Length: 250
Image (spheres, rainbow, N blue to C red):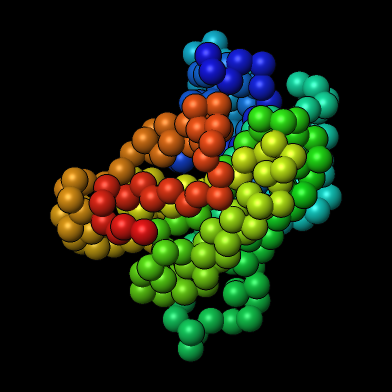
């Protein structure tokens, strides 16, 4: 129970990797705030899974691209579990759609940036002042932020590259306050993200090209997040850690 007594906020914590992270942190004793945007049913399913394993959590609806909603999520966490926040995991983000430059509208570009970059900025801004020494922030970048992404993913890749840079900047700024900031960079992980946006033949090709010859699991990403959120990684900050089965080396 390496996170016992700590409070963790997981944005986008209701499904796929976010759900796996919420469950993992709760299994290690954290009080988890499961943030979701629209799928209340899925959020409640995640909450029930946490409770079945003896964990403690609440669900909070909120659009993390909006300042007021970000503030409300933090306020709900404080009301439920106390004033201090010890862990922030910024999972919320997404590709939204695959669009080439010629087909991309300005509004689309702006939305993808808000979803992936502004969300991390707003949550960090609201949570960091409440974090005691020894706290940790874990952001979600992507392999796309390393290599430019797949066909039609330029906006997403650019946003995730910005998250990687924001992670390094916050590690420098918040480190003297005893707060560590790291990011995980997932590659091909078996989630609804790829069910929606990646063709089966592309997934098969990517998995076959990976040295480990398979896709990753959401639980494997959650294990890495938990490591970065815990004192096990107490001298790691500013890192963007690849988890892609060896497809890409930084």
